[in-house]
Image (tube, rainbow, N blue to C red; front, side, top):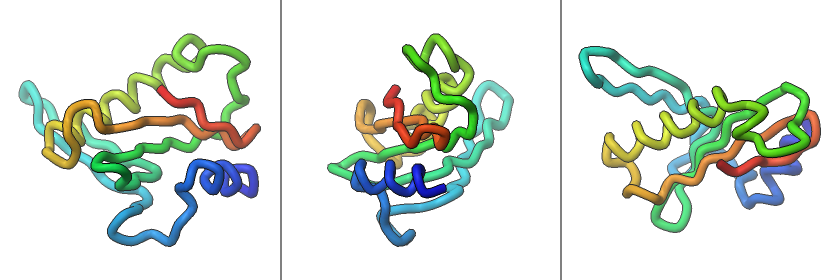
Length: 109
């Protein structure tokens, strides 16, 4: 837990939840006759866009996270696409990261 909080502090994302920072933020969107639903672990408004952080308790990857954890990367990209499609952020203004609590590092995707 402490490593996770330190990582958030380093990234300027450790704050009291409120209008600019939400925890377990629900997202849902109907697409192609299906309902896409998820919960963003941490959603923060920053610099005219959004930051999405997903917490992971797995062992941290030694290399490129897209190679070691492609499903997690795809999950974040889906969240970003949903947020843009809902009009909550402009295209290209959603920054996504995986925070691995095992080492307290954020892997930006």
